[in-house]
Every structure is written in C-alpha cells, then in structure tokens.
Amino acid sequence: MPTTTVTPSPTTGAHLEFDGKSVVLPMINGSEGEIGIDIQALRAKTGAITLDPGYGNTGSCRSSITFIDGEKGILRYRGYPIEELAEMSTFLEVAWLLIYGELPTAEELARFSKEITYHTLLHEDFVRFFQAFPKDAHPMPVAAASVAALATFYQQPETDKSIQDAVLRLIAKMPTIAANAYKHSTGQPFIYPNNSLDYSSNFLRMMFATPCEEYTVDPVLSRAVDLLLILHADHEQNCSTSTVRMVGSSRANLFASISAGISALWGPLHGGANQQVIEMLERIEAEGGDAQKFVDRAKDKKDNSRLMGFGHRVYKNYDPRAAILKKSCASVLNKLGIRSRRLEIAMKLEEIALKDDYFITHKLYPNVDFYSGIIYQALGVPVNMFTVMFTLGRLPGWIAQWLEMRRDPDTRICRPRQIYTGAVQRSYAPITSRTGRA
Ligand code: CMC
Image (cartoon, rainbow, N blue to C red; front, side, top):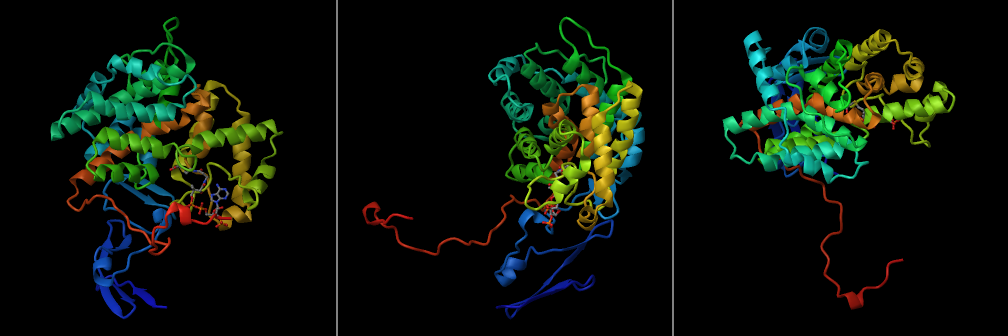
C-alpha cells in the first residue's frame, strides 16, 4: 500500500508525498482566514485524484459574495451581517448588493426597482404553457419548467446587455411565475401584477387576490415575506447554487442554469425541507403532540426519520437565519393574533433536541427551514408553495454566483473525475452463449 502524508505550511505550501512521488501544493488564503490547498497540479504531477463524496472538503471556486463561519454561526452577504440586513434592508436592496457587490445608493435602488417593475408581466403565451400542466402539479417543477421556458422567449445572443436584461427579467418575473403556478393549482384565473406595489406586496396580491375580490396587503405580512426572502438570498456553494454554477460552466444561458438550480432546490434534504418540517409538525400534532417520541425516532438508526429542519453541512452551531426566524415567527403570529400549536411543538422539539446528547454530539441545531414554514402558514401560503418561496429568495444569490463564475478567468467547465470500481476489460459474449444469472 502506498503511503500518503500531507503537511500544510502557510509559507511553503502543502507537501504531499505519494508512492515515492512528491509535490508541493500551493496554499490559498481567504480574506476571513480560511485555508485551502490548491490541488490543480495534483493529477499532472502524481497521477492521483482526490475523492470527496458530497464535496465536504472541496472548494469549487473563489467567491467574494457570501461568507459563512459554520462553527460560530456567522452569515454575511458581501461582508454585511445577516442580522443587520434582516433588520434594516429590503429584499431588492439585498438583491442589488449580492449582484453588484455594494449596497445601492437611493438613486440606484429607485432605478433598479423601476426596471424590475417594468418586467413583471409574462408573455401572454405563457398562459397556454401553464394550462398544459396537470392541476395537481407541484409548483416547484412548474417553476423550473417556466424558468427554462423563458429561454425560448428571450433568445438573444449573449452580450453584457442581454445578460443584464435576463437578470432583470428573472427577478421581475419570478413572483409572477410563482403566483401563477399556485393559481393554476387552485383552478383560479391568474392575477396580473400591480406595478404600484412593492416586490413582496405585489407577490402576495398575485397569490391571494381573485377577479371577484381585491386583496389588501397587510404591511406586517409583506414585511414578513421580504424578511424571509432576505434570509434565503444566498448561502455560498450549497447544492442548488453549485448546480447553477456547474450548468453555467458549460456556457448554458442564465435561464437554463437557474432552472437547474430550482430542480436541485426541490429535494427534501435541501429547500424541500421546509415542506417536510411542517408535514412533520402536522404528523406530531395529529399523533397527540409528543415531541419527545419524535426526537427519539430521529435518533434511532433503525428508523429512517430525521428531525427535519435540524442539521446542516456547514453550520455546527445555531443557524443565524433560524435565530432571526424564531423571533420573527413569534412576532408575526402575535401581530396577527394567531396561536399556533405547530409553533409550540416546534419550540418543544428544539428544547428537547438542544439538551439531547445525540444532537449535542452530532452538532445538530435548527436550520433556516425549521421556523420558516410556520410563518408561511400564517401568511396563508400553502405547504406545497414553501419551497417556491425559498426559490424566490435564493434567486439573486444564484444570479450573483452565476455572474461571478462567468467573469472568473479561472472558470473551466465543471467536470469531476471518479475512481472507477467496475469490471475490468472483458470480451463481448454473443447472447446465445450467455448463461443465466441466478
Ligand atoms: N436528524 C437526526 N439525525 C441527523 C440529522 C437530523 N436532522 N441530520 C444529520 N443527522 C445525523 C446523521 O444521521 C449522521 O449521523 P451518524 O454520523 O451517527 O451516522 C450525522 O448526523 C451526519 O449527517 P449527514 O447526513 O452525514 O450530514 P450532511 O452534512 O451530509 O447533511 C443535512 C446535512 C442538512 C442534509 C442533514 O443534517 C439533514 O438531513 N437534515 C434534515 C433536512 C434539512 O433540514 N435540510 C435543510 C438544510 S438547510 C436549508 C438548505 O440550505 O438546504
């Protein structure tokens, strides 16, 4: 067996000795002190590759958009703490920050908001497109398909101007697409955007107004939506964002790349967890509200239940977004005069889990999805729309990451390698000579 040793050194690099070969790999330092070993020369110099299922130790890019310190529970967009943005900014302001790198001036924000407003309508042919989906279609694949279909309406060759137009169109049309996906599932007619409303209020109205009844947007609700969107706006190289970058690395257009990101987000271990959390709380409630019993099941390796909304690949501490949402959840329900049995069960689950040895040793804390569903329910958002809400929020992050990837001179098409473990070469056997497999 060949022996391998890696000795990181901040000055001289990481010295890797492998099977009689030796290579010095450069060290890369991030602005917050994190250290990486640049392995780009590894295969050429040693013939070996790395193996890292789930990429837990693999940096796929350099990025200046979002910083997370999972051990300390820190999240910053472009250097600004999530707590400050959540308290003081708006979603469109955060979208600008993520995409263009700085907080906008009043004039820039006004221009951006106006441009977004200008593009909120969908082409009328989209109505026929929506009609083709079954009535009970989950709104996530409807959203993914709709965003992919935008590429058929805007087929301009890629230039800085056409990319900028695509950015504006995506941010502007996503609430319209999301609300239409919902309206389609209820069989109600689509409600056109009202451009006198702000981003989140416009979305709520498109969701809940009908041709027979106007919907007056409660500022408490629209602020709650804006906050949720801010908290979801970016989260560095998570599964869906890495998907957006990976698809975009083939030079696929922005619409196609974002559509792929929406599909990745749908999974129950990623954005789909918010739907799973509420379904879990409903199940516990229906079974009599015994939180301890569910925590015990989540720990039992023979039972494949997990405590949904708990645990995170990066956070080994309380997810700062969950801390903000927990407070907001209580305050929104209070302002709306709603008493939620599900919030009570969630808080009990959290209390039990945070004292439990399994959750402590595994460093499992509530994540962003743990409390978000309870707020969505209070807003009247149906359960199968929860992950679409996550999509609305994550959109500017995906866009910023896609743009950064495209502008990075180091970007190459993403093409991981593998350690092949299949059959070694063998000869084709004619079908008549094959014996049956037991
Ligand atoms: N409940 C019970 N046990 C858990 C949980 C959980 N929610 N999460 C992880 N574990 C255990 C897991 O069984 C394993 O135990 P052991 O080492 O004894 O076999 C250990 O913790 C490590 O788990 P893992 O699956 O290897 O960790 P990961 O980093 O690959 O997965 C995760 C992270 C978020 C997929 C996982 O914690 C999970 O499934 N959580 C529930 C789903 C969820 O809430 N997802 C939303 C994530 S936040 C929103 C987003 O950005 O997508």
